[in-house]
Image (cartoon, rainbow, N blue to C red; front, side, top):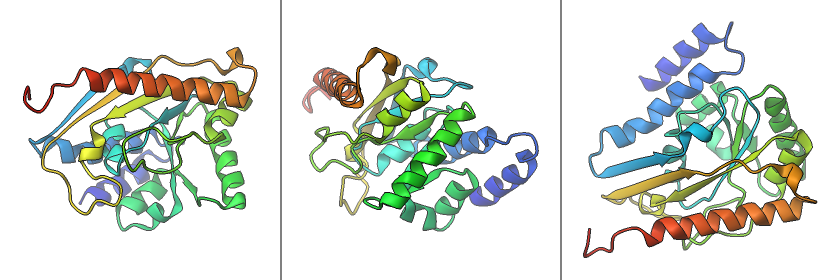
Length: 231
């Protein structure tokens, strides 16, 4: 039923919403239904006002679990996902990703990476933000892995800000290689202030600066969480 709604919205809005913002916001609602109907899953989003609605930006988030996808839809802000190509083959959800014209990527495939970068440049030129996981894959232990260059190359080339997004608590929804959803999760999304790539001499310096920001903010948030005994 939700996919049927997506198809209807796509058909109705296609003539006047060429960037697919309405369908994306519907997809945000679809993803957030998992939180709305599950009283044991909680989501807090801070800094949403820092996200642009009609300006290019590259959003970068740390990656802990499949639950990150559901959580980041809670931003309720226009953007195009960069996601594994195999996700686009999933029934209904993958079909909806195609309708949204999100950007597929085959990891390790040079031709796919070049095509992905070109599509991201296309959307940024149309003033549509994109969202990427610069670690490239989910973390096994919750620690932030080294970042790849792609997001930062795009920001520098397109002269648009990088917006760091910090996720905590999502590893408890569905850890990497996990088989079941955990019963209780308290997820937090912190949108940090934009970073101007023009202030950095090269991609590597920008990349490591943003990674350090995310690591520090993640540590700060986790340090303020109550212990199990306090919870």
